[in-house]
Length: 330
Image (cartoon, rainbow, N blue to C red):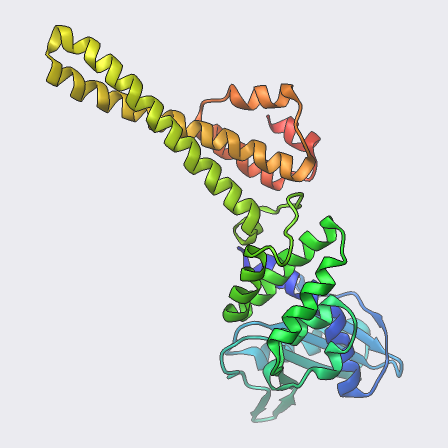
């Protein structure tokens, strides 16, 4: 999964509870979000940029890993924000979400240069006040904070997810799995709830290519389909190979005919199995996203025997936002 996708998802899922946290820290009410693009030779975007009721600007960066030169990066951001919004009334935060110890510097003290920003390690914050908010994003933020009763929070999350429709629940499960990648032990516990079906994972999930590995149900379906198809293909190939080998054995000798026939049959069976697996994968992904396919589309997919083309079509099935978009590639 690309870092860009990860950063965007973290920002989207955690933005609202982060805003509530910042309001408490600075004692100011946030009135609006600002354009996060900054003018530069190379366009840059900050994670979150807000305007408070007193017209001060609040800049927030969310970091999942330690950055050796974060203090210099934050200074660059400050200069760009000042240039764009024509103000020096700026408060800056870096909120560290990682599991490892935070080692970033929060200030610069050099000849003719003194600069500082606010560095917050989310693990040091007791988030009881935030998780009192009755929303899923606050609960997710709670998993990253200094919270003692994780089991109680998991139960609360399970109840909240059960109230959502299939599409929203699927989106939240995907996002939560991604966020909990920052806390591997908790991710395993959450995954176990899904595996035990205490949290229902909808089949109709909007799959993204970069996130497909994190979707337990769909991922398992694809892997199981591929395994079954290969096994059936191999079995079919072995039977065919044995039959052909025996027939050839009458003329060339039983031993030689069996050996050659089995080799040829196994090779062909593997090829047929892989082809069928890829065909089934494409159909399963499309039906998971867009519902049952027509016989015409099914037939077109099953007529394709080129593995490279099938592989490309599988990626298109994952990436396509609509069935019509996929049909153009078919």
